[in-house]
Length: 188
Image (cartoon, rainbow, N blue to C red):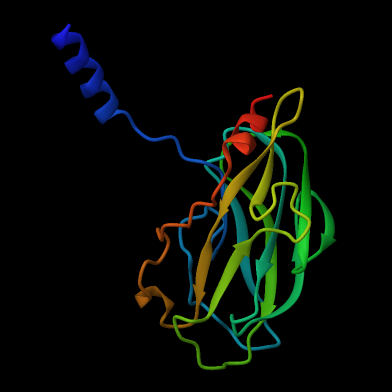
């Protein structure tokens, strides 16, 4: 019996944790670099990418890109998907089918007028004001019936020195408090 418990304990300690859906802004379409430091002044546009990462399979997402303290001015966006809502106020994106894996949701185009930037300047993915999962970025899972779950939203630092900011791409995100009834409701 003790050997069985030891084997189970070893298996649990070496198991990898599953990663949840994560939506953030990146300088590259692969979702690798969250230091937005290649800035150019007008008339050129600065293009950054909103990427859905660690996606096991989903059909839609809903979020907002907060640009308040970024030093950037929203200009336009493009997307291969159906967008409902107004960027940057909050968007719902329909993928048109079940999509799995990391993929670009939107290309965001900004103007930058050469203001000084610090590690306080960020683009942050936050919950949409109309999120079906209150207080969280929402993702609709593939399947019948469709289940909407919460996802994490990330941030990207803006500015020429942004690659020196602390906790660049791997900052921990706060866990939202959930009641047991809310957790059980996800599996009904």
